[in-house]
Length: 455
Image 1: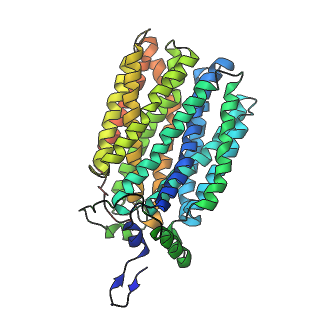
Image 2: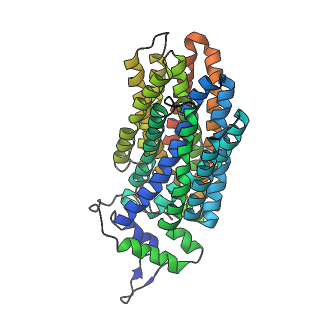
């Protein structure tokens, strides 16, 4: 909304007022509050990889059954991502965020009581519905409040909470699952935590100002902006970027497939598909694959924990580079690094007795670059669309990517079989490396959005 002050000048809109702010305590509260939900998501996704390895031993499950358990959650995530984005553009970001936490928290706790493979598959599907809807909604909410100068960095820091959650999953997998009979049930019980956090989200996080304005709730929008304007700053102001600050074509687009959005939508979908295929194919199976290379269950979990620790510096590097190199270059470089890490990990794991140092080193490279790429992807996605299409655009891209996350766990046993006992592991990670490379090419075609105003 614009207007005139007493001097006749045009008053800044609420979006412009938010863009001009420094990083305040309210921004910090939003980032931490959304990030905890993000971490709990990651913990749940990470836990299933350790549960799969434990069930392979306890329930004597084969690779095909394990791949179904690993994939079914992503079926739910595909549906949830599409529905979550649509609902966020209609009901609000905060409402959907809280609802999704509630859904997957309850379902994860119920999964701990699974009495059969079928029951576990049903519960994991419901978990996926909540997980898939939450991620694009949370990144959209943070993007719409972040000051323009540091918007990309804030979203990458939000995504960095994924590493925190995955590390928590690895710690639970390492310390709890091997320590108890049916320890995987105790591990899944921890997933009830998001249910409690949903209450905090509903009461504590603000609704999107842009969403409130589009719904005519201007008094609430003004109150939200003033809350941020009066909040004490936590960081010094960052020098404003030189790029243009608006993109009028985006304002006129009627859908994510209308010109000029169609090209960027297609490229974004390709990146989402390839990064999902490689990430979930590799990390969902990682404990089980290491178990198959001759390592014990406890040792496999220990190595996965060490590899996972490299995710945090990957996020921090991406957060630093994304406001210097820009979104597009950062995303492309980290995808190329992911490709190199995937191929190196496959080669390092070749043979009957793979060298532990080589496996951990290559795994750390893959973990570092792959998760940094995720951070850059979540930063650039919401910036590609106007407010009325932002939730839909990011949700649709995430939903398309989830198709790959469904296929990824199912494809690993196929690749292992094609490559045989000697080359199956290498073939699997070479395929993932090629997928990362394709994603890097698609990333180069995306428009650079650093410094642009969200419209």
